[in-house]
Structures are given as structure tokens and as C-alpha cells.
Image (cartoon, rainbow, N blue to C red):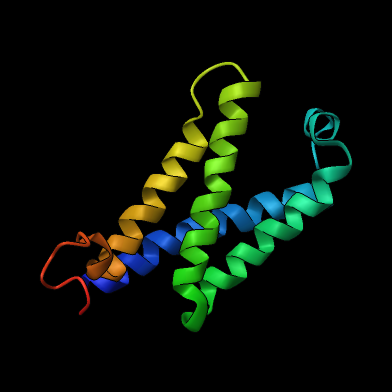
Length: 119
């Protein structure tokens, strides 16, 4: 299996997790989630689905990586500030996303001062 396919697989796992989270928010939210998120629950589910769609379409995949990384950063910040303990789910998903993006497009990991940064 090539690096690109492994990267796609990792990003697909993150997308699958976000799609499942959005489905749960739309169709069967647990009472504690409904209570803590309130009326923003549907909006968050729509944002999650939008980022998953951007991640799934090849032409918008890199935009999707940025959107999902930003969304997961918000998840990490929310969990860190509002819930006890370490935000394991957000950190794990973000790590899988970054590893997948680096394997999918290795030029993303080159620094700006690299002679190959523009290639």
C-alpha cells in the first residue's frame, strides 16, 4: 500500500468519526449533549458534515484538512475548558488527520525556507 493511500485511509477514518458524530447530534443526541450544546447542536452537526464533504471531494481535500483541523482545534479547546480530564478524542483525531495529510501530500511538511517548498 502506498503512502498516499495510507494517508487517505487515515483522513477517511477522521471523516468517518466526524460523520458519525454529526449523525449522533442530528438523530439521537444523548441528554447531556443536548443539555450542554442547546440550540447549537444542529448547527454543529451541519458544520461537521460540511467539513467531511470538503475532506471527501478530491478537489477540495486540502481545504477540508484545514477545516477539519480547525474544527477539531475548537473541540479540543471546548473539552479542555468545559470538561474534566484530557481531551483525548480531539487530540487523537487531529493527530490522525495531520499524519494522514503528511502521508497524502508530503510537501505539506516541508518548511517555507526549504528549497523544495514551492514544488
